[in-house]
Length: 73
Image (cartoon, rainbow, N blue to C red; front, top):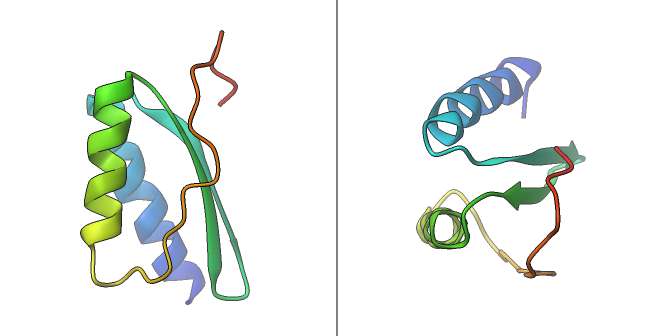
């Protein structure tokens, strides 16, 4: 994963997620990603399903899924 790859992922995510008012954070370290998504429950759920189906991703695990009082990101 190069800096250009990460930049491309970030820009693409911002473009697609902002249209659906999805916010969050994406962390990357040594080949691993950790992501938090915030937004309308169905839209976030649909996005997570899309992420899981993407063949570039392996071992996708949902750690936490709950309603929040306010967005953090």
